Amino acid sequence: MVQELDPVDVVTVGAGWTGGIVAKELAQADYDVVSLERGGERATEDFFTVHDELGYALRYKLMQDLSKETITFRNSVDEVALPMRRYGAFLPGSGEGGAGVHWNGQTWRFLPYDFEIRSRTVDEYGEEKIPENMQLQDWGISYEELEPYYDTFEYTAGIAGEAGNVEGETQDGGNPYEGPRGRDYPLPPMVETPVLGRFKEAAAALGYEPFQAPSANLTESYTNPDGVQQGQCEYCGYCERFGCEWGAKASPITTVLPAARETGNFELRTHADVVDLLYDEDEGEVSGVRYVDRKTDEVYEQPAEVVALTAYVLNNVRLLLLSGIGEPYDPETGEGVVGKNYCYQNFAASARGFFDDENWNLYMGAGALGASFDDLNGDNFDHADLDFLHGGNVACNQTGDRPIANNPVPEGTPSWGSEFKARSVEYYHSSVAVACQGAVLPFRENYLDLDPTYTDQYGRPLLRMTFDWREQDRNLVEHVGPQLEEVVREMGADTVDATTTLEGSFDIVPYQSTHNTGGAIMGADPEASVVNDYLQCWEADNLFVPGASAFAHNSGYNPTGTVGALAFRAAEGIEEYLEDPRPLASA
Image 1 (cartoon, rainbow, N blue to C red):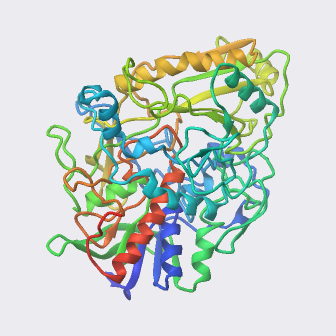
Image 2 (cartoon, helix red, strand yellow):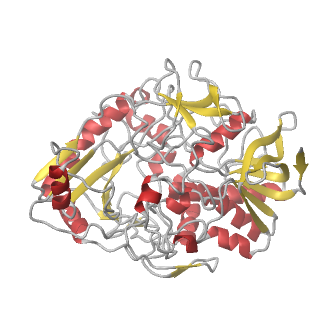
């Protein structure tokens, strides 16, 4: 039996960064907001004295339960997709705060080039520069339009960094390639450790322009514009896959969700698994959502004036497909939009140096403690004679070498036994990696749809992922990889192991990155996108779908800064819609 609840103004499906931002903004505007989160409750106090690497980093305590729901995967349409039974390439979170609890804190703005990538590529190099089957398209919004929302997210979260471009003026010490920002970061950058200093010296000697990376690991105690207080990072090294016991890593549970609760207009329901959006195609709107209470198995319908689909990328796309909203993408014809332009992240280009006579305290660190350079990112270098587009951010990160999983040894060392143990100890404090976070651009054959065979605990089709590396990805690695090796040698490493080629097909088994994007992309054309530049669904005026599912491609950065900016943009659109229901015009 389905129980219908009293209607509310706004319901969000998920309570991570996007859901939390939307909830806070609308609750502060005096609208009644309910957030439905299928995982459990979380608070900073839950993480006191739990530096449990085995439990959190290797047994995934904060992640989605794959026995209840997973995805199926294949490399091409000619293969049969199989379920991902164990965690591998990426780690979707679950519970209050979502992946915003266990993230590292690396917080970037995408380049102005990213938002107009097709137009700028054609203007600079001509239409023929875009490879066949690459579905490159502009986002329907410019960096200049999105900049105020980036600023709001950074000041809400308390981002630490050093500006490289304030109102068009280049600033010493920052990233000279970043888009113009209205003001500096709210907090100063993280410390420059000895190894990061060595990286920056080497990069500069080779002609690059390095800088301290922006970070959501707070460098000072901070009170944000909502009056929410956060602590100062202790550089303990337990960020990635962990919650922060100091409240010093910005997350939804330390920022936007407390601010939403403070209004009295917000309710968070945990263990609430949304299984369907209540969609009326004839009316062109959703009337609410249907969800299952995981504790009691009771089914509820929550009516709402506006639904914000704010779950993880893959869940957003799956709910649209299950609810029949929008035309599913067909790779054979290139028609349809839901599931189109799925992209991942390319971390193949890397170099690791082993130093025989150097020792650093590498167990100390933070999730976003690092130094970077952007000379090889975006279109910051000439691609005229190159056989790929875009590039990636190059970084040396000191995230904290935890003892179980962080034991790199030079190539040729046995993977177990006494020699492995001895060399692990020898290089525990003297092994340094430099890596490129490569952009992944959309191709016709990389997409998301519903699996015809496998179902979840409720009998609904699982989401099927079809993805493989393309020549674009391989050529990017071959160009960048040797330059990373050169940087590590300049740092003085005695032994260097470098990856300068990307061979074989994409393998979903080893962990790589949780940076999945696309599938419900934004744009100016309803025939080529799912949502407009307010993240409002073309097929349902009162449905908004912010998050990385809206990315028309994946850039050479972590996605969270752009996810946050788009969420604030969507919240503004939702408030405008509630005041005057209609399709929203571009800014």
